[in-house]
Length: 402
Image (cartoon, rainbow, N blue to C red; front, side):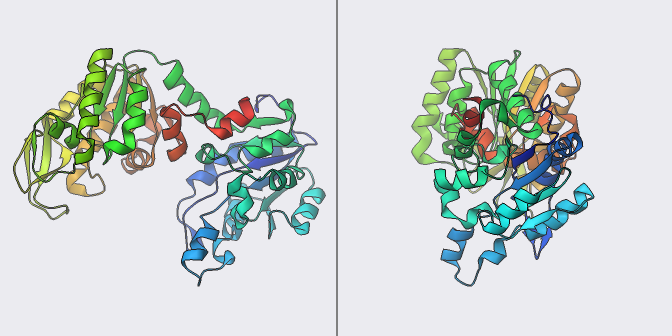
C-alpha cells in the first residue's frame, strides 16, 4: 500500500520513527532526523488520523551495565517530545513507558489530530531481540503500521520488522521518508543510467570490501579515496610512508583490482596526495605522488592531480553514489579534496545526473559544505544504506514488501 494514497481519516497510525538524535544536557543539538519525519506525521494528521510514535534512543541497557551511575531516566525521550511539540506547533502527549497500562490507555484515548510519543523502546531487551509478544503489545496501539525509520531498517527488531506480522497487507506501509530512501537506493542499484560512478572513501578497505564487491556488478567506474586508497597502493608495490594501511588486506586489495579488470570496471585511485608529517591540523604539509610518499609522511587528502582526475570522471556520470570522504575533511588543512568532490557531484547533478549521498561521513561533508540541496538525495540511514549497497536484505524493508 502506498502511504501517499492512503486516507488516514479515522485511523490510528502507529509510526516507527528514528528519533535517535544527539542530546546534550537535555538539549537536542541536531534535529535532522526529526524534521525528516514531519511530512509523514503531518499527512496523517491532515487526513484526520491520529499518530502514535515509537522510537529508540541510545543503548540504555548496555550503557547502564558499563556505567552503573546511569539510570533509564538518562535515556528518556521526554526532551524529544518537548522539541517535537515545538516543531509541530501542537501538544505531544507522552507515555512514560512503551508497554505499560499508561501507554495503552493513552493510545486508546487518542483523538483524531492528536500525537502520542511512547517512551524509549530500548528500555526493554525484547525490542532488540525481536520478541513477538512485545511487538504484538505495541501493535495493539494502532490500526495501521507505518515504518518511517530507514536508519534502523537493517535491524530485525520488534518495532522495525516483527511488528509488521500483526497488520494485514493493506494496513502496513513505508512513510514518506522511508519511501524516499528506498526509491533512491533502488534507482541507484537497480535502475542506474550509465556511466554509473561510485565514489568510495573512508579509512579502511575492510569496512568497504562488501560494498565494492557488490558495486563491481553495477558500476562502470569506482573512485577510491580516503585512507583506504593507500592499502591499494601498497598492494601494487607503491611507497606510502606512514599512511594508513591494512597490511592484512593487501591480498584482498589486489584481488579487487583483478576482479574489476576482469569485469571491465574502471578503478580510479588518487594520482597524488596532500601529505603531512603528523596527523594534526598543525602538521607540516606537502604534496606527493600517492605511490611515492616519503618515509615519515602520511597521505591525509587527495591533491590537485587527483581532484582533476576524479572531477572529470564524476562530471561524465549519469548516476553517482557517494559513500565516504576523500581525506580527513574534519581538519581544515585536509578538507579541500572532499569539498572539491562534493562540488563536482553538485555540478554533475545540475547537469542531469542522479546523485545519492549515503553514509555518515559523506552526509556530514555535504552538510558542512552546504551542498545538501544540490545533490539528488541525501540518505538519513548510514548503516542501513551501507548494508543495502552491500546487497543485503534489510529486515525493515522486507517486513513491508514481503
